[in-house]
Image (cartoon, rainbow, N blue to C red; front, top):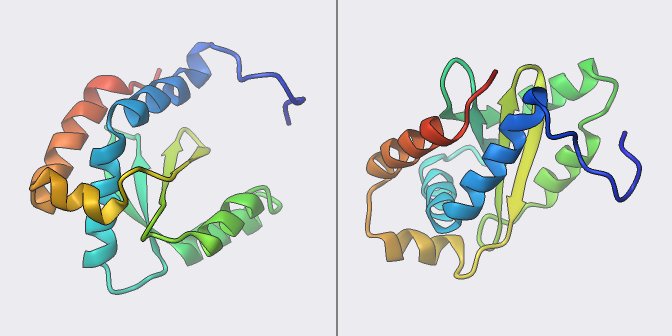
Length: 144
């Protein structure tokens, strides 16, 4: 655990986190639209949007029970993430689990406009949005 006021070292092992932050900042509305599109498509509300960074960055479904099992294996270190996901409201928020090299990062924000409005405003279908964002993601985030 890092003391308050400190940040992760800007080294090769953590570089993907900074790159992912930049990706999210540059693509907030598209990610909100994508999250909404998946929310509409998935009938099982226990699925969450994820980004698997290996072997190449791509979007995946993260079932809640898989996250819970992982939490048990890592001595409840993901408890906060599970709490956020339990209270997550896809009508107004975006929550995405990023997975890389045995590490997890939660992407969590409230876009303006709402995710549903972002989806309508983009005027794109879900498949096209996935292809577009994955291409940007693969150019932006690299694992060393």
